[in-house]
Length: 140
Ligand code: 5GP
Ligand code: ZN
Image (cartoon, rainbow, N blue to C red):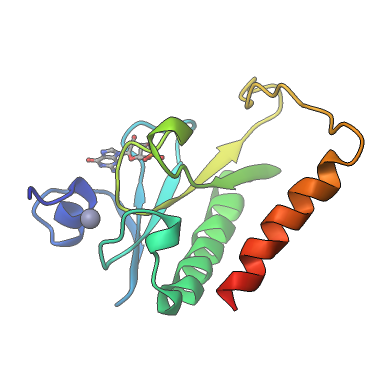
């Protein structure tokens, strides 16, 4: 299997603009940013998506996300930012090595998810709750 692009960045086979790094995670600037400064946070150990992420990396990823986000807010004087992760092709994931995006936001930048909000019919929310809770209980 060919090595993934983020693993190549981690092993320095290809260059990247590195913002932060420790033994567990690395943060780089996204090569095609939504706004300049758009950063990615990724675990050094390859994993495909959020569900593939080992529990021992949760803390390191969030800790790095906070450090990088704080630096973005301070250096770019941000009033707002988004943190998000695309998981699966239909959700927009294009690199299959888990990562968090942190992107600056600006007034009137006209960037938004196009939302088509639904409404639950009578009893439907309860049904969804029951199904999901059942699968949560199965995990414990
Ligand atoms: P996804 O689409 O999987 O949520 O996010 C992958 C991100 O990785 C994209 O925003 C894309 O611009 C970025 N990306 C893809 N290849 C490279 C690369 O070689 N270097 C850097 N720095 N970012 C990359
Ligand atoms: Zn990888």
